[in-house]
Image 1 (cartoon, helix red, strand yellow):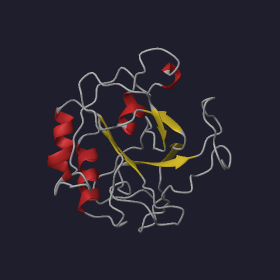
Image 2: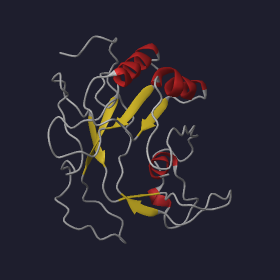
Image 3: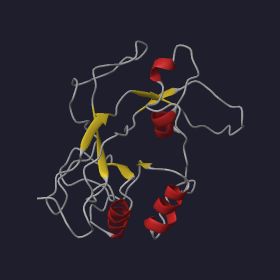
Image 4: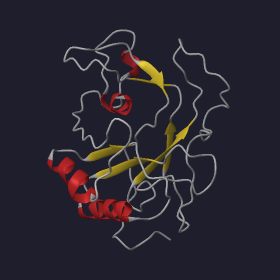
Length: 205
């Protein structure tokens, strides 16, 4: 709910309207592959996640999940292959919350053709918030995972404000007309630009 609100949330007017998502008129295609306690990652991301999303009309894929193994594995290969074969799509992944140490990226964020987004601090807060211990604008958040990748590539690709973000709140009432006040939580935003994809097996110098 939180990341979906950051992307396409719409407060429908009122005092929270300045904190709408980046694209409040956008449509979302949401795919749930988790249980009550953990993720159940499909064996093949290409055919089980990316391709169905693409066929549903999605061109920007926002993913706030990953495996902390830090290895370039089959999930990364699937992401690179899909991005190469579908240049009109962009796969956005959060880098993870395993900072501040180096080599702490999750997969598939560390893939070559994904846009890996890390979290940074911001000095701009809504007037009703009281930040505590903020180090200033533009610092990498302490929790945000760092690069480089195990094969030496520079990641993350982009940093975006990821602390003290106002967005939607998920809770147990799933009624069709339920809409409660937003809640402030830490999350990663998405970006709107990406580097040119590379064929699987190739890397940037």
